[in-house]
Image (cartoon, rainbow, N blue to C red; front, side):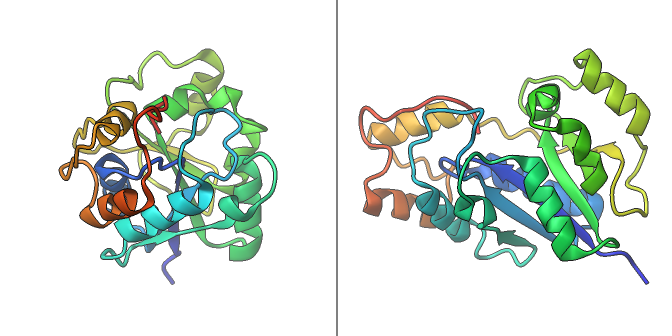
Length: 220
């Protein structure tokens, strides 16, 4: 029997844009995922300046992926009180899924480089594989020493037939999107249809999100 493969892509999605969707779809193809869940963070403890509310970010995400049956929005981190820690989410999902499903956490190179700052980061591989790709101009080479040691210990050439425990890499076409620049364009009243799905743009306009003076910062 083929082991079920479930991908997980977290982020603030403030707002969701074509870069997020390209990353999700590239991971689906690279690892032949049965499903990929996109999970907005509720209270991202490493990031400030999130503009849209958790409920608004979840609503925009659902609009963005409505036409792709492989993708699903998962609300658990939005609904959880307190800081959002990925390791808690993975442990919760593993308990729900059971021991046999292959759980794959999708990371960009920026997140991989920062991994040693995550809460209980060494426990992530107990619950899932890590699948990493280069994001924008952030290299995968010359990783911080603790992260490089983890890759050396757990790196694999391809995703193994196992539920968790390995670090694998995949490629995707470059989709350069700056979320900061995107929010600034929205604040100027622009409608960047090449960067944001039309249904999401309609939602942003109807909710009067990202108006002048709310440009925010960050890249997720």
